[in-house]
Amino acid sequence: MYLLSETSTRAIRTIAAQAQDDSILLCTTSAPIRWEACDLERMQRILHDSGAGFVYADYRQETEDSLVNMPLIDYQTGSLRDDFDFGPIWLLRTDAFREAVARMDKDYAYAGLYDLRLKLSERWPIVHINECLYTVAGDKPQATNQFAYVDPRNRDLQLEMEAACTDHLRSTGAWLKPDFAPTDLTQGEFKHEASVIIPVRNRVRTIRDAIRSALNQETNFTYNVLVVDNHSNDGTTEAIEEFANDHRVVHLIPERSDLGIGGCWNLAVHHKACGRFAVQLDSDDLYKDSHTLSSLINAFYEQQCAMVVGAYLMTDFHLNVLPPGLIDHREWTTDNGHNNLLRVNGVGAPRAFYTPLLRQIQVPNVSYGEDYALALQFSRRYRIGRVYEPVYLCRRWEGNSDASPSKTLSNARNLYKDRLRTWEVQARIHLNRNGHE
Image: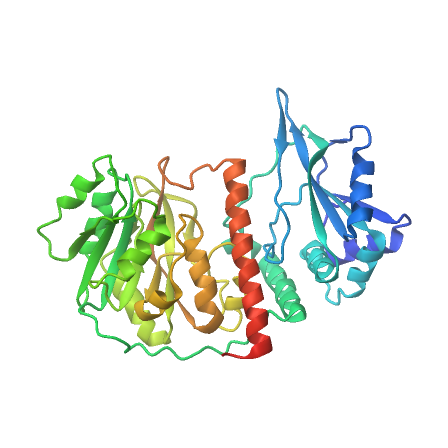
């Protein structure tokens, strides 16, 4: 077993040169690993029988007073994020390992292991064994930092990860040139230049603040606020009705009872009152100041894009800034942002869309990942504009839908985003093979 204390290309090549058996066991934790009878043999048998280049298994986490099963998720074509959780034990075929290493033609200080598994996935199956086959003792699993890729301290690491992923996309035919379709921003007739869209269900503590934030915008164009009240029953409906005297507020209650956030967006976007541009405001959050809406709409015309993403500050309920503070996604580049988006798990906020195109693409009727799905599809053909100054306050509190998700919920969310990436990779390969029909 090789304890992987670093993830450089040099370390990976050293293991390939030293390996003597027909399989290689990598361990990414210094915590003790305990095997029960025949568990390792089980992994080896599945590695052989499945024809995989690499297998990984669910495991048990031992603490002082408990033993907890740690289920993982299946690897698929779209599992391109560099933080994919394989658990701390990897079992690889030595010949597959060496074949992949032979194609590793760049020397990475950080991205060697990531480069290895991407190279492996190009020619060998990566198989998840959904059985708990070992125990990690005395080492609590590290929580994934979902903002690691926007932390300036990790910039060198992230540049390497982006380079490795970009090479993989080129190898598989999914890389897209920065050859964006022009966006004609004059399509259709709209009464308003913009609509702020607020989907809401049971947010009586925050909905008034959100609506006031939208109504306080200073613009040289007309706009309205479409509040999609998804059958609230906690006083939210009554709170929205307090704004009935302001003609800019359109209070929508769906006829359907099966809508997620995405479905609420579709309802608003297809409403006759929707403006030329549809701009996000979550019911928990606020625009930073009175210039947010103008900044986002101006970006459409200045950057000739079909979607605009701003930057936000992470705060608590009382608007005190929380770590990591500013999330501006400056890792995005015009030339490669649309490719690197397949590696990272988010695009940023707030998001704004050119309504005629959004009506064509449609929003998935889900309550998680719908924004990421849209960013992937828009970026396939169109330029995404960026506003790097903070224009949005993202409030974190106990009522958030993404506050402290369980392992089961985290797995479901990651599986969904991986599936979105799989579909997008397939679409981009098709696009490259068949042209922009």
